[in-house]
Length: 435
Image (cartoon, rainbow, N blue to C red; front, side, top):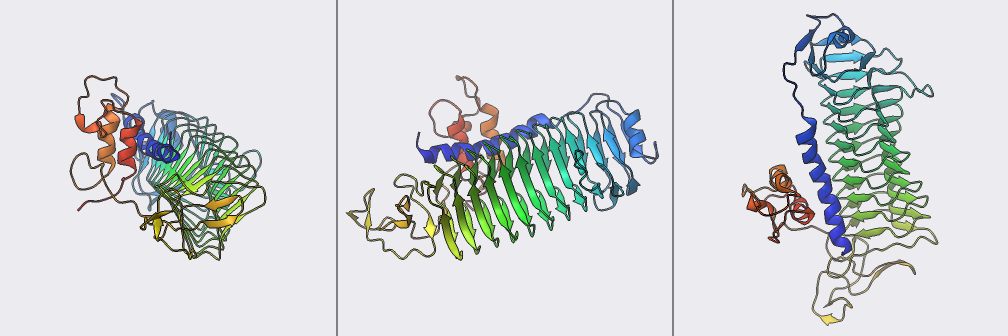
């Protein structure tokens, strides 16, 4: 299979997982009750202690100075995240989730304790918790982590605002298959989003990560997808792939204003960097002691040093013809010829001479213009926009053994089966509008 196809499939899986979150993480309980704080109980913890699995604990506006342990499958919902606060008063975890399928939404969660090994205090801690949804919260001013996931899989962290957390806004440790999407992380002291110690198969997508020290860090973490994030003005590193972090996909991100835009080091091999815009950094790409990474269809623009590769790091800098290589703003070649050997008269949008980094790192097909994919399909419901509703059409039919295919729109490539290739066609055009 061509490398380009592999990348499309991996980016598509990001969107399929998001759809699956929607189907499987939204749960309802027959006969569930709603408990109101402070009407029914004066504290949130008293309400949890009295709740049954499936109940909703609705918390009215106010400030609650508590350390809350959620050890039941409940939904904990604040009236308004700007006016409903849980304050840890500078000690411990503010909310400690130890049960599966817990929902926490619409709070300000603040002032968890400082670093105290081995506790690593957090605004919200998930410990051996699965299938939880943490959404639409303000998570501020915690002395260690904003949210910490330890041995916690298949959770969704979405739509939260993280500011002024001392160590990480979000940290995943030995946690797999989580979706971290559409969060905003600003002015956190150290790292915005970190994946560590074999945290694999996670999705980091659609987040705004601005004015932190480090943006996204994957250390000894594999098979993660980092896609469509806006990573700006983080003082040290925008996206950091390190310490044997392998087979990750970094796709469609806009990274700007850091010392290192993307830094890959420490035997981090077989990663794919595709369709990113890397601009106005000290280094666009910095690669040390890492080989067999594939880097193509990126826009590398206006960096003080576009790329640094240390001796012994050998990587691929273009896809096969005609997918091409990268756009380099400092490339000075001409485009008078085309073809796989650039010897056919007529331009093809790729430079006739390679962009050479060193003898072992060469972009053979540098792009003459910034990479900008044009929409050619994927609007399955004909509403003029390629969006989650088109993904849902494919996801509902995905993997069913034909015949029949109940919704023929899902068979995008008309090969008689609904599979990852159909999802890839929609995913690569996700967010595009034909109007």
